[in-house]
Each structure stands twice: as C-alpha cells, then as structure tokens.
Image 1 (spheres, rainbow, N blue to C red):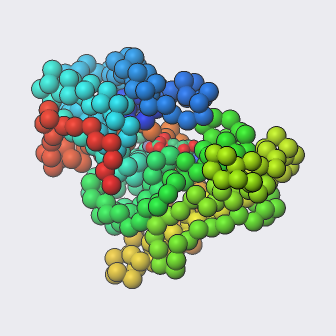
Image 2: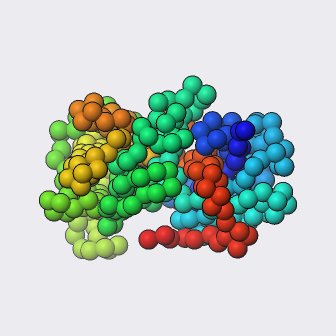
Image 3: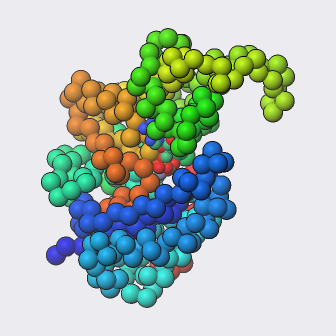
Length: 365
Ligand code: KG4
Ligand code: ZN
C-alpha cells in the first residue's frame, strides 16, 4: 500500500507544500518564494516573512493537494519542518500542520530542516528513480554516507547512518557558505538572491586572476569559516578601509570595477569557497576510512548544492574515490516541502509520531 505524506515547509522565506509517496515519489511540490518582498532589503526580513507565510499557506497547501488529486483525508500523515529557522515563520507552518492533523486525525511528524536537506540528495524528481532513490527504502547502497549541508543558514558535515540518523562532524564557526555567497554578491553589487547571481557570473571569469584565502582551521578540523573569505573579497573590491566597523571609509566601491574585474573576482570567490568545501569533504571521507566504516556515498544538500562548480567538483570526486554521489535534482536543492514529506516517511515507518504539543524551535545547536 502506498503511503502519501503531506509535507509543509515555512522555516525561512519559502512557503511550500508537497505530497510525496513512499518517501520518494514527488506527486506535487508547490513553492511560493518571497524573493520579491525581500529584494529591496537584500536579505530576509523576519516580520515580512511570517506575514507572507500566513497569507500564502492555505492556497499553497490546497494547490499541492489538487495537483496530487487528493483530498485532506486521503493523506496518511502530515509532516512539518518545525526546526530550525525563523521562529515567526516556523510557527505559521507548525500551526497549519497541527490543524490538519487534528481535523483529519492523521499522525503529525515534526521534521528537522537540515536533515531533510540531506535526504533530498537521495530523492529523484520523477518516477524514473535514480539508483540512490531506489536504494532509499533499505539504504543498502547509500549508507553509511558522508553528508554535507550547504545553505544560507548552515554549513555542516555529517556521518549519516540512515535517513533519520546523522551525526555532526563539523560545522561553520561563523558565516554559512550560502550567507557568504549572499554577502559577496552585495559587495560585488550583484542581484538578489546573491548566490545564484554570483554563480552565474563566476562561470564567465578567471578564478586565477585573484588570490583569495581558504580558511581550513588547522590540519584536522572539520569545521568551516567563511568570514575571512568575505572580508578578503571586500578589501580586494574596496581597498583597505580607514576607520573600523560601521565607520570604516573605503577607497573605492564595486561601481569602480570593470566588467572583467567583477567576473574574475566572482570566479576567484567561487573557487575559494568550493575548494574549502572539497578539502573538508575529503577529510571527512578519510576519517570515515580511518574509523573502519568507509562511506558508500557522499550526499550533498541545501541551497548551495545548486551551485554549478560544487556539483561538478563533487561529481568528479565520486569518480576519483569510487563513491556514489547523491545531489538533489535542481528543484529540491532550495527550500521545499518534498524533502520534509520524503524524510517523514522513514519516521512514519517507525511509527515515531509527534503529538499536538509539537513546538516550533528556532535553533537546534
Ligand atoms: O537551503 P536554502 O534555500 O535556505 C536555507 O535553508 O538557508 O539555501 C539558500 C541559500 C542562499 O544563501 C542562496 O544564495 C544559496 O542558497 N544559493 C546558492 C546557489 N543557489 C542558491 N549559492 C551558490 N550558488 C548557487 N547556485
Ligand atoms: Zn534550507
């Protein structure tokens, strides 16, 4: 019997709902992005985000059900990304999910957003399942895996034993890599959201034209740091500042860059960011080998898993290290509800349900 789970995601600035069958078949995935509302601020404004979720949540859920040709009482469970995220945004989705669970009598499942990004790396977009998706049911081909989540809020490495069991090996001590991309795009005066704009521009530039740092935090560390890279880019673009903090005065700005300089700086930033990620992935894979539990696969998820260079480099690494590589289809890289519904299936199989006291949790560190 097929199990159909309604997933809901409202942790940041995407209002999303999806129906996923048996943890892998995406029957509908609706994402209402709020980029237009936040563009003028060049970042997500929490109050605007939660109000927009309130306005959009009902139509988004209805559209997900309509597309899958299901009524509320035909879903087997309701899953909600309840942690981590912006508290006001999370609360909208949690309230909606509880209401549906209560009204239909279906089980409620609170899902961790970051682990769901990792799970997205094992999902496929259509019914022509990838090898990884086929193996998800028992995990024999996928796990143990090394996992990397790279998003606007997170940069973390994991040892992953199963869809519901991931241990953190290392995480960023300052900016997340997506956040660094977004700030770098502001420094270079590119569009919003910054990550995809910078990625596109970087593909036209020469990464060797500028030397930017790769912060490795010591020989063994599996943690990340991206604030030094961001500051190094700022100084290359604007020169050395006079004064400190918000009073700093710079010699020049991004407006003074030629097109070639802007392209080359974007390419140099992208090369430094992705090199850093690749070095840490290799360290994590080596560690798994040393511990006598070599990874069968590498799973990469989160918004930055849409990055062209990162996708290329991890695919090459898979060939070099004879490792299967799971990357989400482009539609499941950024925040979406299919990954929430997909991961929830594995909790559903264990009958590991939550009750109506489920809370929205802003941070899980
Ligand atoms: O996973 P996500 O949608 O939200 C969070 O959970 O944070 O990730 C959004 C992040 C943003 O920082 C965005 O700039 C970045 O992912 N991003 C990219 C690309 N596409 C999205 N960064 C680099 N290259 C991309 N192609
Ligand atoms: Zn996310």
